[in-house]
Image (cartoon, rainbow, N blue to C red; front, side):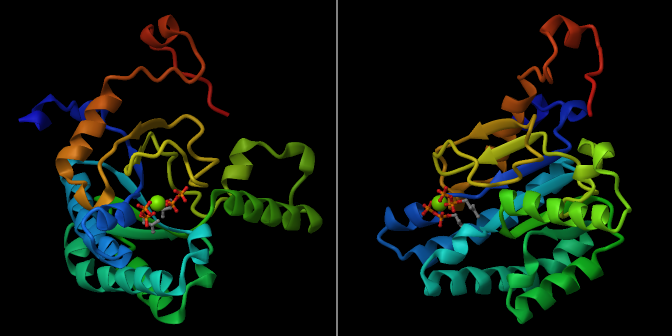
Length: 253
Ligand code: IPE
Ligand code: IPE
Ligand code: MG
């Protein structure tokens, strides 16, 4: 029903999700945090399917932050196992649906087996064009900016880049995945109002939607709610409302 109210011509191209609240969802039920993470996988399945059915072009899932490495060892290991299992069990369906798997983050910190699974998934789905599914893994927004700066400095050192000519476009070309469009919509579940070091550069003009729903309970209907909210907003990119309504394209650097 509700989906009919969604305007297919005004969908966000790129939706990024901070999947938060697994631990609290579990604690509220007298379960362990790890059981919360396992339940969260059902939401991942539902949202990947849902986003694909709705025609979202890019879906980025904040799956594990650099800061998350500091969690108790048993929790980190379980999160890695879950992710590895997801890649193993879902890849056929993901591939069948024409979804391309990508990953951003300090992937060199991942253990060899999960890294291999991820590389295989990326390789196998490379030519798929229906939707991009991006896992932010061992990911930190500041680290990404530092890594881009480091790579730019190397180019400058080699004389391949003139510091005076550095602009936003060149900078963005050194981020982990320069082919991704910036997120239009950033969703955070789990009732928190913060960005927790996610895509700091890319969310400059993203619309932010937060919900008290804990990640394991998040389903396609909640995604549709977020999209409807997104479609009710006017994105101004610094212009006045009158300028936007007269159809002027904002200047993007
Ligand atoms: C999100 O749920 C999953 C990851 C951060 C990997 P949390 O584990 O952060 O759940 P809460 O925030 O403690 O409820
Ligand atoms: C953000 O959630 C990271 C992921 C969802 C992977 P956190 O639970 O780690 O964030 P904070 O600690 O509440 O800011
Ligand atoms: Mg959390």
